[in-house]
Image 1 (cartoon, rainbow, N blue to C red):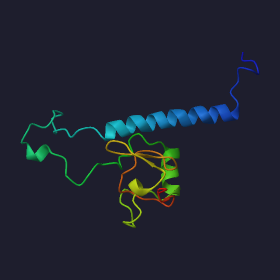
Image 2 (tube, rainbow, N blue to C red; image 1 turned 90 degrees about the vertical axis):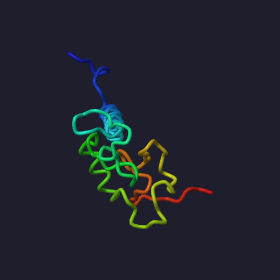
Image 3 (cartoon, helix red, strand yellow; image 1 turned 45 degrees about the horizontal axis):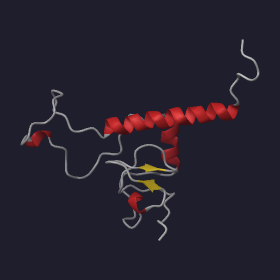
Image 4 (cartoon, rainbow, N blue to C red; image 1 turned 180 degrees about the vertical axis):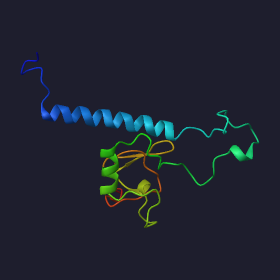
Length: 126
């Protein structure tokens, strides 16, 4: 039986849940940003044009490691992988944190495309 001191407070519970969610998102981002593979699971051979990833940029919209709460967060801020306003991409926002190839955001959870956009955009301080 747990004593009062051993029970988690509501705040502790939510803090731990956020940490676990962030860890899951990080793992999902690492998996989503993996190198391209052939259909047989092997790495593409040099010169194998069919196996090469498109040159359009990183795929940061994979939702594999993003839980329901994170998806709701992304929906709340209307995050998209291509900014509607070309003058307001994520990589020009003060909330964006550079990553490789997908970045992160201090407000929008999960992998963030450098050219993505959302309603929380704030210009970088000069």
